[in-house]
Length: 213
Image (tube, rainbow, N blue to C red; front, side, top):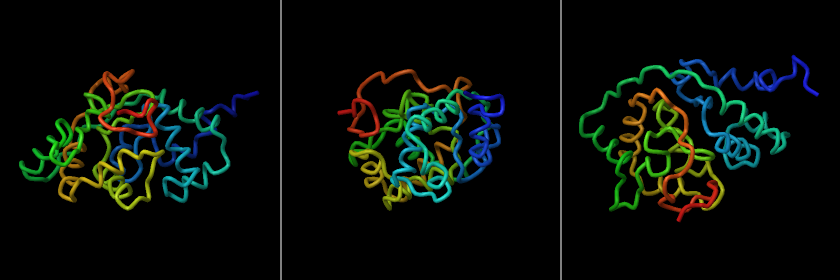
């Protein structure tokens, strides 16, 4: 039985030390915003840290002894939080770099078999419930770090790991371009994830119900 001092909000206070829910959180380079992300996505990431598919010692230590049910409770708590985003930071890149980033985000690159970001992360890039995260509003440093983690396989997901396959087909210049464009975009006023996939995913993803093609 929960007491007033044992609510889920009290029990996840340690998480808020890094993943603040105030709007300035997106200025912190390596601590991503988790407030408002789909609960299924957050739960998957907590499980991935616990199982060693993602590498960050502090996160692994904090979740190593927690059950799936408790991790889902944590995820649902943060998923329900609505907090404003700050204005985006303009990227100091050339028009050509920004155009390439926009192309990858909105159209993809058929020659390299790279789907558009919007094909999996929603037309507004705010994510799709229950397991696909929003990627707009994240700091550029964090985006670059995650691309690098997939590249060197220190970040993994349930197989088939669709993001790992995509990142293998992106050049360093492409990563820099898409992270610059994404991090410079304003977050829609309604930043909630889309409620469901409008169509099948362009490739199979083990962490998504149904898995895509």
